[in-house]
Image (cartoon, rainbow, N blue to C red):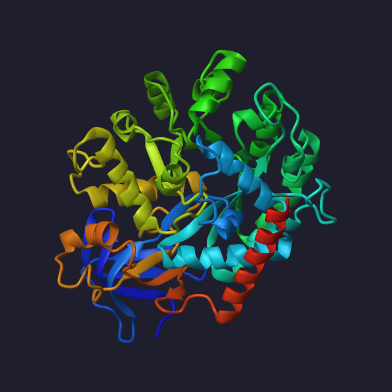
Length: 463
């Protein structure tokens, strides 16, 4: 059997489902041919329904370890800001070996859930007291090893984190694991650049948020990074919470997205994570830059962030993609479902995320999320096409949600009818099979995860 061919009775290409598709890729895992109405060579592996893998454009891997542990009221006005205190408590105790175990398990979950690439927005850099590790990039290297072990495609986004609020307020004690001065961050980034070059990881930058960086340093950091790689993606948390908008207005008289647009050359390399609270001017001007909005619907719902006005962004032809962020849910289909359903609740109508050219909601959601996720990743992962990575997933034709359906209903059934009982059967990245149904984590991995969770939880409670 050839290791560089797969035959799909149905494959989801740029124009939708096509019959009898033969896909060929090279030793680097890049697609070299896509033939429709093909007759496969004898012995070629055959599958029923083949989808391109989905990029996950926003991940904080360590947060998976405490998902489900913050669902109790701490305060009558419980919010993102009270949740953040719990997150800081967990972040204090994660070690590099533990992070590697957590991320390895998480990336396996992502593969099983239809994600074949991740943008890792990583800010836990130092030892708990704030001192750098002897090997300064040790925590980042743990994430890279996890991606290599699982086959997950990676865009690594080391976070520039400097302050505790607008106006360069000094960081608090529990933020010392995250923070860098400009010069130390650039040296840190350069060391990561060499490692990423050697391991096939795309390296970008994540200014954490306007409230957490020194604006005077931002341009110098961007210049340094773009000199090394002009295509490096840049991701930033922005306008996630109304309080963030209010604090930014108090600081400079402008809303966060507007400040960025007025002071930084925002372009298609940028991904604005959340951007939940924008006004009409910000929607229009941000869309015109070509930047991607990074939507994380399950996390945004979990944290009570608010609802992004998809219709307004769509009216300006804005780019967008999806991420699982805090990993309260790890399921690409469920993020798309949550996005559509949030809009139905907001606008009191059905079938919102589509347009006249593509009235099929599932196809519209999948295509746009795929395109935006690929752009935000800075990697060749935009679909089953020549020059793109051989990243794809097989849907199970016998799954109760899909069995007996005509092609025009299969993707919608996958997104809207099977997210809690995944219809994903197999997953490949760069042409190598990484997941088969019923082959998730070993008992040893599960024991390791349980031990880490109990250890971190016990130490967090003591504090």
